[in-house]
Image (cartoon, rainbow, N blue to C red; front, top):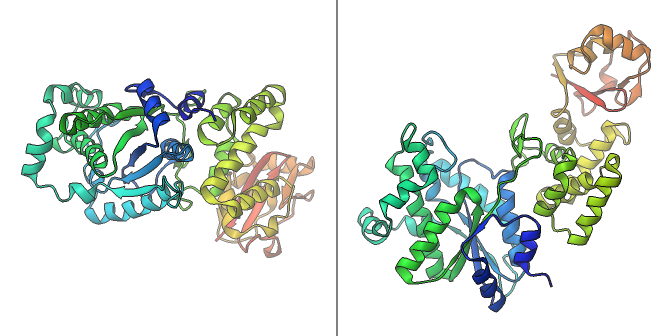
Length: 421
């Protein structure tokens, strides 16, 4: 069996580690407990959180016990890492709601019944909420040299700009206290997180050493980037969220289906559980048959099923094919059709009546009505996958899909839509 750390390294999932050899020896000796934390700064996790989530799952499959920590306490404070300005504080009620949402998302990727390494789910409010200010300052704060905290990049950058409140300055202490409590309660000896969390994670490891004399480990995962320089996980509509109400399964699928050839193999390593041999075969396919986009389809299908389930995957694959004339549009669920058309040029009209050429132009699928007429005349205009050759044709209620949609297509690949109402 491949050593789990070797596998993580091959997948490009190790950015920094306090002592990789010592961690390897500890993991070879016995099953260890590992945690990663997720703060409720939004009602959903986003695709960047997928990296530590799936890494926890990999470690559990390798025989170690994962803990998913949701920041019921730290979510009330806010991490200054990666921010140029003070974070707006959310109400206790909002944070509590978001904590429960995140619990459900994190829990989907861990096995709570596996023996002997069943996963755990915790909130740091369970122990932080019991602390008094005096206890916090006396028992925890005294172990944090201010000069070292000021030297942190996230802190020094803010101090050089608009400044930093004590609230956010104290975040590192709270996160470090999480590691100490998890060490005490569950003998947790490894914390993982994004590379932007290196300072927070190592501070926690240092606190465990100072207070309990325990030797624990820190390991960070690289932040995912794109070869073209644009930010990974960003779409026209914003972040790529794990909540299907915030990012539809169709949009999620399409994001990965459209992966650049330069990125797709890296994504397969980071986000899928395919073996080295399988991914190396995909790499050959990308080099030899890039037009087939086999790797992109494999990536999009595996991730969509992992996050949303087989039924949603089948629906989005059917929609993707049907939009391009390879399936029955009328068989698509209304929600899936709506999600698909949200990703293409679309016109919203109060009622039917306009001719197809007007709708083609209004949707933005073609640049003008004259271009629309030309597309119809040349046989390149489609309504619900049916070729339209009559320039005067106006869609009727009989053409509507799910009672309110029309699918427009120009040629083989350009898709648009119309929503009535």
